[in-house]
Image 1 (cartoon, rainbow, N blue to C red):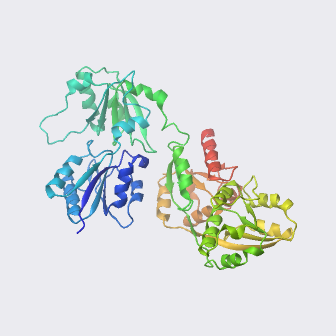
Image 2 (image 1 turned 90 degrees about the vertical axis):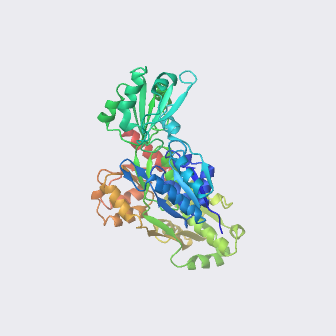
Image 3 (image 1 turned 180 degrees about the vertical axis):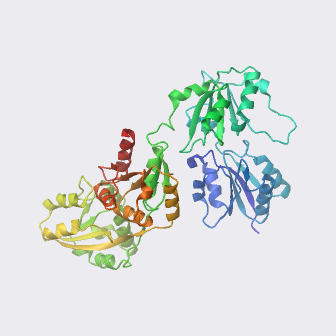
Length: 506
């Protein structure tokens, strides 16, 4: 019988990249994942797809499951022989009640391990530009609960020692008790004008930071509407935020941007936008699939590949699916040795380089017209050309080549189909005004998004539209939508650069 085990994993404060390597491995190996309210849902992508997920989140006034019941659940799953990943926000042993869960596991005879996580007590201030220690300012710090066990008869916090004995004080779960915390610290000698700060949803793209003083903190909670989850920091290090901000002053911080690109392609755009501070909302409107003719056209072309003079690619997808089929047929790049190869732009050329192919012809601009223009001087007019591309595409390139006297075979390398899996999420996001911007990386992303909205653009009112180039922008205009941002360089980096410029100008 398989022996069960429970891993208490610190999921970190919110930024999924702060999960430890060991925490990721335990998630991948788990049969059951038991998740908390503060454990970022993006971490679930590391789960085994066949694993069971149980949500037991607790937040103020809304407990999915009582703590003792959660502990019993872990023990039960462990005794069933399951490997359990208990995913807890921050660190399990920093006010994470990990010790209570281990007590139950120990009593039940279930093996366990604690996998430390990055605690919000340090990470949230850090992401706000506030170091908890600094050689010239703070030599000590303390992490204190702002919400003690209500069943205790008296507080175990030594306010007299904390007020004057520790440089930086970090209170977790203390927003609702700010008045009491401040009064106790002031009562025992902490200066009323001591700098203080609240960091709400620390390390996340919607992080909020409020600076105040110990004297004004409680009033500011009411006036500014500060709500949990938030970390309360008291100490002179708060003044360092002015010079050490790095997270919430990035160019796209606070912007909520919908990415409509296919799920398989979205990662690059999502990563770059996140790096610039944006909160990305992945709502793919398209999916990339194998060709509708089941590779019939591609197979025929590959059988006669020796008869062609040129091979052209107009997208990275075309490259991926062409070479996949080439390899599936038992062939390799030696079959292409006699060909001249053209790519619609540097990004596609770089994709070709992954297969050891250096493109002979690459225009500076990423349009069919430009590829045609740079090829023209290289053609005699009787070449046989193979163009591997999407099922639906503009006819500019093949028609232009035929006008020059070339024989052109267009084969379907892949097809773009509508992805309506997230239709309800799209409509709900727009109705709730939860998006500032939508990115379009091709005409098909526009077509399919508008189809999901039944061709009506009312829900897009007030949302900035960002297009990867003029052709995609023209597709928007067919729906009476005027893009505010149109990149001049038709790549992901070019689009993000245009978004940065557009946001800064606005």
